Image (cartoon, rainbow, N blue to C red; front, side):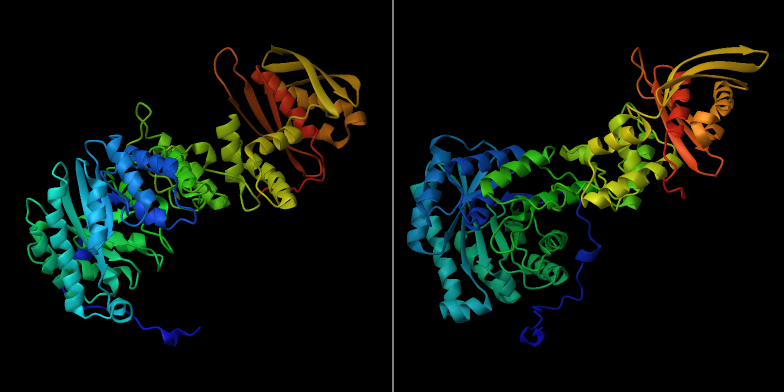
Length: 565
C-alpha cells in the first residue's frame, strides 16, 4: 500500500489535557440534521411525505433542535420549511434550524423561508481549512474571515424582516478539522463580535469534523483547547458535528463531550455524506448503558429504524449497534450458554417482576428496553452448542432439558444446520425434538397401565404395542419405573436388546399449571452394550409421562453418536 503518500495530521500538542479523567454524567444538547445533512446525502432525496414523516418521528423521539433544510439551496427545502411554519407543525418546545452559506443572496432567501416561525436557528458557514483556502477559494485568513463577518452582520440586519421570529445563531467554520486551531478560534471570535453574542444570547459555535482527519484523542485535545481558549466562553454553546471518515465518529464525539462540548449534531443511525454523520442512536444508548439519561425516547427502536429506512430508502445494517436485526442474537454456543445462565441468575434478583441492575453476559443493555424481545436473543446454527438449543426449548416450549439430554439433542440440531448450511428456527427445533423423542408413529407404543402397591413393593400391568402386536407387560419393583423395566425383560423375543435397559437418570417438571397442566418426564437409559439413550414423555399424569419416556428411549435407534461429554 502507498502509505508514503499520506502524512499524520497533528494540529497541536496539549500535554496538560484534562479530558481523559472526566466522565460524561449528562446528555449533551442534541440536534438532528437528518433532514438536511442526512437528506442531501441520499441517492433519492426525501419527498414531502417522507420529510414530514421524518420530522414527526424526530419530534416523537424527543429532539428539541432539528435542522430542517437548506432552504436557499433548493425549492423543495424552501417549501418544506414553509409547510412546517404555515401549517403550525412545530411544537412549542422544538426549534427548527436552517443552513446557509455566507453569501448575501442565500442569507436573504433563508430569512424569507423562516418568516413567521416562532423560533429558528440560522446556521451560517464557510470553509476555513488550509487546503480549501488554497485550492478552492484562493484566499488568505483575512479574506476568509471577512466572508464570515460580513455574513454575521447581514444576519443581524435581516432580523428586522422577521419581527415575529426569535432568531438564534450558529456559525460553523466548515472543515474545522483541517483548520489550524488558532485560526479556528480567531475566526469564531470575529463572528461572535459581529453577532454580538452574550451569555443571555449565546452563539452556537459548531466545529465540524467535515472530514474526520485525526484520531479521537487528538480531536478531544483540539476541542479542549478551543473550549478553554475561546474568549467569552460563557457566551458560547460549543457544538460538535462529527463525520465518520475514519470510522471513529462515535468515539470522537464522546471524547469531545468529555473535552468540553455542550452540543452534538448527528443523524439517526449515522446516515450522512460519504461515510456518514455521527450516529445519534448509538450515542444515546451508549449513555443509557452507563446509567446516564439520554434524554431521548428510543423504547421502540424497531419502529424508529423502519421509519428511517422508509424515509432514507437505505437499510440499517443488521450488525448496527443497538438497532440491527442481529445485535441481540447469539449463535455461538459459549455465548448462548452464558446468556442463558445470566438471564436465569437475573431472574433470581427480581422483586415484583423488576430486577435491580441489568447484568447479563454479552448483552450490554436489556433488549426489552428498546422494544426487542428475549425470543430473538438466541438463534441456532452450526456454530451453536447445547445452551442455545436448551434456551429455545425452555423459553419457547417450556421444556427444561437435563444437561446430558441437551448435549444429545444439540448434536441432532447441529447436524441439521450443517446439512442445510443455515440457521435452524425454533419451530424447526421443535419439529426435530418431536420426531426424535415424541414421534406420532413408532415401533413400540405405550397404551395403559394399572399399578398397585403393597408392603413397599409396586406391581404393574401395562399394555404396549410392538410392531402392531399388543403385549401385556407385568412386573414388580421398588417403584413403577423399576416394575415396568423389570417386566420388559420378559419380552426380549420381540423387543430385542432394548428389553434389557437400565434407567440411569430421571427428571420431571410441569410445562403449565392449572387445569391444563402437562407433565414432562425425561429418562436416561443404558442398554446392554453400554449405549445411552434418552427418552421423553408427556401427559397430564406424571406417572404416565414417566412410562412413556421409557418407551421413547426404547424407540431410539442404536446408531446415534454415543459420546455425551
